[in-house]
Amino acid sequence: MVSNAKLNLKSDSVIRLFFSYFLPSLVAMLALSTYSTIDGIFVGKKLGENALAAIGLAWPIFPVLIAFELLFGIGAAAMSSYFLGKGKAFRARIIFSSVFYFAAISSVVGGILLFYYSDSISLYLGASETLLPLVKEYTEIIYLGAFIIVLHPILDTFAINDRQPILAMVAMLVGAVMNVVLNYLFIFVFDWGLSGSALATVMGHGIGMLILLQHFLRKRGDLYLIRAFDIYAILMATKNGIPQSSAEISVSIMMLLFNHIIGGISGDRGLSIYSVLMYVGIIPFTILLSVAQGIQPIASYNYGAKLIDRVRSVFTFGIIFGFFVGVFMYGLSYYFSPYIIPLFLQENINARDSSLFYDIRDSMMIYFMSYILLGINMVSAIFFQSIQRTLGSLIITLSYTLIFALIFALILPKIFGFVGVMYSYPLGNLCACFVVVLVILYECKKGVLRNEV
Image (tube, rainbow, N blue to C red; front, side):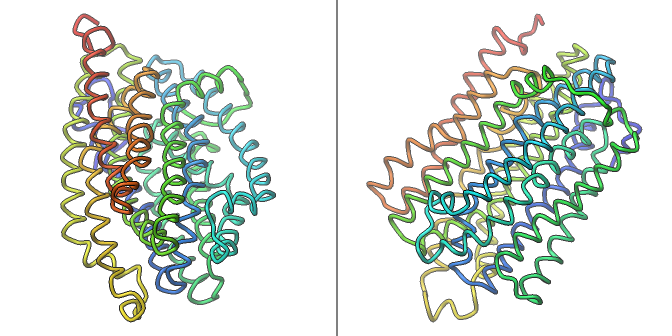
């Protein structure tokens, strides 16, 4: 792994730089996704299918929190990296400080409001009479810790753009390990149920946040907190963050829609199946996300330095690499699904529901086909955002997260039932790939990818 101090974003080979950012991000993302998956295993084994279904209903909350973070964080991080590339470090610090202060205050206020309306939100999420108390038990703690869940990834993204991918990785790893330990203690030892799982999640993020925060407070890099607040920086960060924030909002909408459709077709059992898919699917999803994030600092920096050939090179490499990683992820899920699924089910499941395992496996093989093309779509969306092509990024993002999947989700279940819901997401990603091609062709002809730039 390459030392951060030796990275030269202007002259080092694109492949070398990519893996310098990708590998730490991959380890961090694997830790994040693995501890989320282990959460699901603990909950499934100890608390059963209803608890899994309750968390499945609560899943749309997390994309909303992440969307709030991305609205300011990823756009501001791309801007700060851009100004660092132009040699304007003080401007980059103003952006970082303004976004951090605003996100901290607003997420505290927002979390309190969510807690106050937790009953109404749980019903809106689709909780049945059986699942309502379980959904509330889990989400109320998440709401109160929302500011931690928001600030942790913001600091992580800025650390990566401050050329500290190793620090970001360590913070994520330590938080992930502590989350697993705390989950075991709270669920199996203290018997705190779903509230214990939620508390472990918040505390895991909190530990990671504190590790990152000390870097910025001690001024160990180009970016650190200063006494500055610029509303214009927040507005510009918001503009640049709209595509990826929209992606998370779209994911939340799709999850919410899927929950209601699945609940209407298959009830709480169907929601349990979908919850397992979400828990397992977060691993390939975050791996593909780490691929996309690996190109962002390189593209932003070189775009600020006006090295357009290098910008095109990192995009081409990211697209190719993302596709092959997606194919590899689907192959792994196909082979290992018989070994993964039982981890989420209680030992006596065959006596109570002998076909549940096979239904989860069949659903997984359909739903996970989306990951074959998801890497291409994610890399393209984040790339265009990183070079401030906001409209192209937004079009791609909405295409693969919402528009096409929504169309299929509204049509196919009426014909094929539960299976139709599963096919909606991969078909949506396939259609989104055609949109990616159109955006790339436009940028090659008239935009930043044309040869005469």
